[in-house]
Length: 241
Length: 197
Image (cartoon, rainbow over all chains, first blue to last red; front, side, top):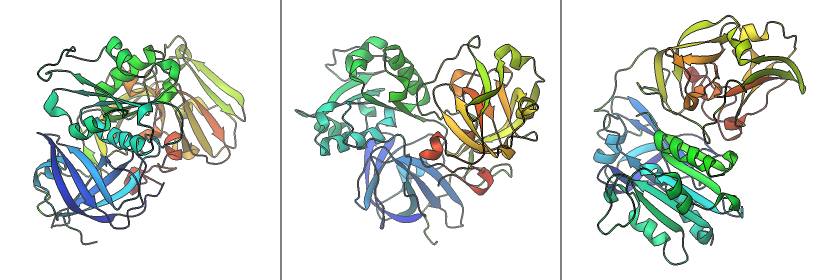
């Protein structure tokens, strides 16, 4: 893993992802590249020298010097409201990374891949789905994406595209509001819905679960009940501000 | 480095001298774990001290609770940048557990149910600096926070405070544990920001 020093980054694009989230594209000269699933530290410096640092997952992967962060606003947060509401193309900040060597998917492993996201937890899993598609492994990858309602899904269009014919197997789950015409159930994922949406435990999939703490705890516990080996379930939990 | 972020800083929070650099205060208790939460029955629980593959000491849950129990008031600091000030715990000091252990070890690998490991210099565990904790804020420690018992080494980043701890392996040198193999620092002092390699 190459961490190195803080690198200056320039905002190249900002795109609304949901009413509370944005995808930021940053140009980072000298960026060493990252594996799918890694994150970066972002450092902001005010004009009086005051600094704050937070970690954000990368939706991008690979060697390009252009990276993509998905940021969901935490209402009483200090950094995320700035990144979601205030930052503009051309603004500068600093990044350090890539960080994290465990919640990572690399091609060539052979095992099927099960991605399970809650809310903005989809960001590192989008990087993995992109990597699987680019490696010709999309058919062995499945994504279960749980959101409160249809407008809460980040990367919706790209995910639908990755799931096109022969692509990543995709299952949506809605916990509060379903889109019009939805014939499935609405509410918290139970064991039966999980069983139907994820690779069977006998196939020994590599499972990645990312989302808010309560979601990850609930899903990981259920996966263990469904027979998945705990050591094959990798988790990343969001919390704090 | 003169990189300024235009317009940043309006929502800054109060600083606190008890907050290490780069940390922010949280009132929550966020969870950092690499996998599912193991559920360990205290009837099955045991805690071992081992060296060179040999068991030097073992305690059952009841044995542990029969040892002198200390009240611990401390701040905790997670490498993911949250800090929580003024937390209260109860547990047994590592000094108590190692009292009768004769060893030349310099480092320790903490082992957990579920397979987690983390490495710590022995001197960071002794002289009143670390505990096996089983109560948080007057309640039994929740499984998601490491219950029934976790290591508590509050002067280091909190990934060193191994959840679901089941033993200490004494070593005559340092070796990386789980997060340390995956990019985190071998020592983890929050005041000098020993976060990554």
